[in-house]
Image 1 (tube, helix red, strand yellow):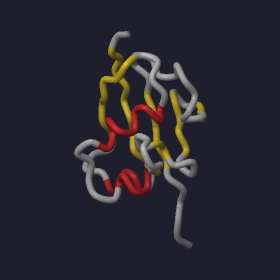
Image 2 (cartoon, one colour):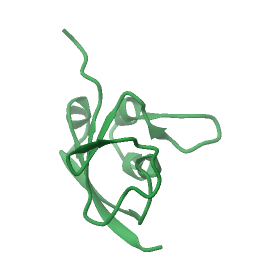
Image 3 (cartoon, rainbow, N blue to C red):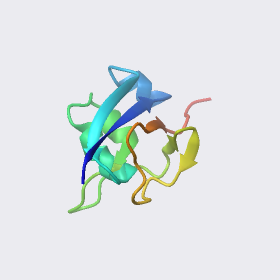
Length: 99
């Protein structure tokens, strides 16, 4: 498979914790959002992994179920396979907190 370029935009608390509003990643074509998470967290600031990912023993980190994933302005299920294509824009929005 070939590599594709994906732009990931951080929204809400993820934007506050990251050192940038967005990053560009190169991943295998057809990767799911969950498969993107380990690449996204490599070198990320402390705290970003806590709000975006959840760990299962013996598995790669996955996107937290409470984080909204929006691909090209449409909400998606992050575990869906064969989802990411070249040029996709993915926004990640953790749940709002406070009051």
